[in-house]
Image (tube, rainbow, N blue to C red):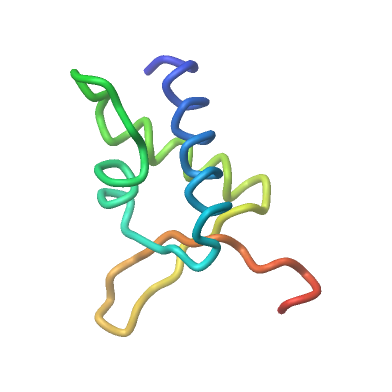
Length: 81
C-alpha cells in the first residue's frame, strides 16, 4: 500500500466534504465515487486506511444506519454537537 495513494484519497475525501459537508457513503462508495482514481485503481483497503486516518484526526466518523449498514461522514464541529 503506497503512502502517496492514502494521501491522495485523504485529499479527495476532504475536497468532497468541503463541497458537500453532509455527504455520507459506505467505504466502498467513497472508494468508487468520491476519489478520482486513475486506472488501475488501488485496492479499497487504501480508502479504508484514509478514512481511518481522518477518523483519528477527528474529521470523519462512521455511523451505523437503521438497516445496519455503516456509512462514513464528516464529524460535526464541536459547537454543532
